[in-house]
Image (cartoon, rainbow, N blue to C red):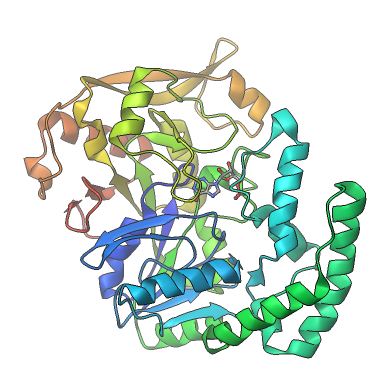
Length: 427
Ligand code: IMP
């Protein structure tokens, strides 16, 4: 059985949760490998409607083991809240495990995320303010506290003491904020540790064991390729890698073990937060897409910026992730539009550009070049066979396939599991 990585191919919110929920039926294991509770994966299935921020979208299958890998930063309060909420809905979380190597979001991370954003004034990144950037910064600065540290209260106390002293200096001397109480933070995190202890494991070994048992393992990406700190619209990015390569690092899986890399694209583009988005529509078409697609952030409720499908973005995503196939989500949102546009390149200083520039200053000057297609203007959410889609919808999909040079495996035409068209099997 293979390893399938499910990767956000645009700016996040592509609908990875639904796709993972769908594929997880056959999976022995689902592993979240990056980000933190900045993610919001919506899953609608017979158990109800859920917005998962940390727990993998495979949790609804009683036999599927769900792992939060070493590459995720965990806010224990959020995780425990999510576990409680699922349990209240009758969802079993006894097969949920978190990596002992996963870093924890501490109270100073969320505080600093807000203070840093406020100090950026007009240049704010528009973060989710969940403490993600400060937590990943501490990880690489070797100032982090990991889930495994909670299992040894003495070592945790020692580590927290020196780190908190340093953080309190920053909070008070740089931002004029109040210091955090050592006793309070320690007591609170010890309680979290007690509740989470049964879930904390060496998850990379569990992945190896699952592969040895020949089980299907799904690596569940968070955010999207264009939010990657290297290949995204830096500095308007997140702080961990949402790429397929990030899946290897964040789950502890060798690149040679990944057999399929499924890129998840919306049938159009959206983005939350600041930073350039060449095909953004600041007009009634953008508003129509937002309202039809309920394009408001799952984590923050912020309205998402909406625009046309961008194949320059798609080619970058396909290349650096090595997609073996693609899922196109929310095709039904376009049902109401008489004409559709696809961006096929950018105009920059009179020249045509077919690659995604690394500099946001350059990207801001790029004007999209569009190709127009006819819309289908009929509801498609009840269609389950590709051949039954209206001709214009098939032409749209075929054109995306051609421009991105990647086969479309799945087409999602609604939020529910069954509202999915399988064009080519993934496995
Ligand atoms: P952070 O990850 O909270 O630091 O936010 C950095 C940037 O990534 C901001 O523009 C956020 O809006 C964006 N971002 C983070 N997580 C998500 C997500 O799950 N979906 C879409 N955008 C996200």
